[in-house]
Image (cartoon, rainbow, N blue to C red; front, side, top):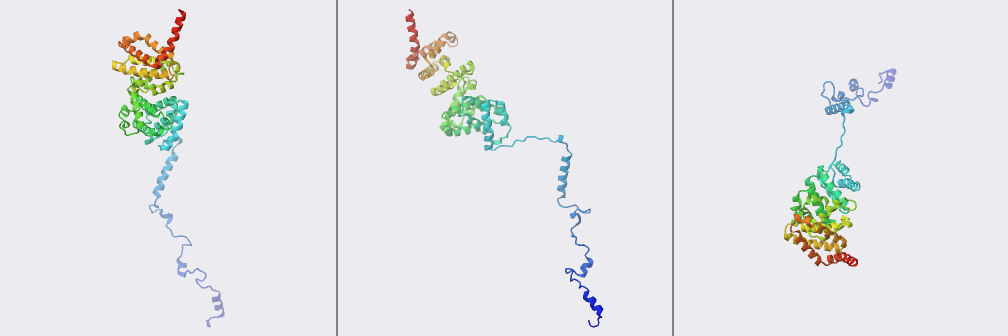
Amino acid sequence: HSLLGASDSAAMATKPEIGAHQSGKTHHSQAHDRSHGLTTAPKKGGAGGHNWGRPGDELDLAAADVARELAERSDDDVSLREVAVPLDTIAIESVVEPAVKEYFDSADLNEAGASIQRFRYGTHAHKIVTTAVLLSLDRTNAERELCSRLVSRLRDMRIVSAGDMEKAFSEILVQIPDLKLDTPEVCDLVGRFLARAVADDCLAPAYVTEHRALSGDFSALAKNAVEKARTLLVIPFAHTRLDLVWGHNGSIEPLESVVESIKTLVAEYLASADVAEAERCLRELAAPHFHHELVFEAILAVLDTDTAKHASNATELVVRLLSHTVAAGFVTPNQLETGIARVTDSLDDIKVDDPHAPEYLERLYALMAADKALAEARALVVRPVALHVCVCV
């Protein structure tokens, strides 16, 4: 240092040291670093002119093709359609129950079918029938008739299958013990629904005649319901008469309908011998002014029997029925006498088809005279007439 001049010493003092302010870079790296702070990643992310492109680019191209195809379509090429989604059990009840209740109020069968058809029910389609029948149990016969018509329409529209029908009624039969708590006559009602479903070709007859409830696989109440259906199906002209299984309102229905309802009542009674059930049907008919028709049809049923044995059994049943209805006040003494007089007036025509009719009728009148309730009722009619004749004489 002593050999250097003063000017050289000053120059060295002011010249910065290499690397003192270069962040530690060497002179060699400064000479060859041409990046100027840029990254050294591949150009275009590997999608350069001599590359295959980035991984996944083929998916972007497919999506772009679809988007381009949709963009090129006009609005006329796009169509929308309603897709029905299968409902679960809870959803079915929330859909079907309001539709059925509205149907009971409006009686519009077409609208009810259309409302129910809007949805898909999958393996739970039987719930439609179950819900409709259960809703009708605590209502009147008018709603039950509407329910039977709805069940038939659902089958015709193929909304429910034959298997769905069987599954629905099996569910109802299982629930009968619980249903009886709120609906004491549930066995009779379910039996009528079963028989009507067979008559409407919704159920096969074998479902009733060979049901497992008859062999004890179900409750005793379920067996009673199936037995009720079997009784309804074996009466003469069953399928025709089952159209009126829910009866008619005598105040608004044509006379022919009321007559047919009474014929069905008598035929069912002769098959079941259930006086209480006959009384219930007569009450629901709501035609007290026309109960003389019950007397007329009951006596005709005796005269129409094919053998003396059947006539004897029918005679005893008819006397029992007439005695009960007269004693309970359903048939008045005048109605009883009117029904008997109609038979007597028609006897000549009846003998043409039934030569044994006078013989059967004589035995019937003898049993009626021996019955206290019937004898007293007839006496109430006969005595005033006899007194009137005596006065006139």
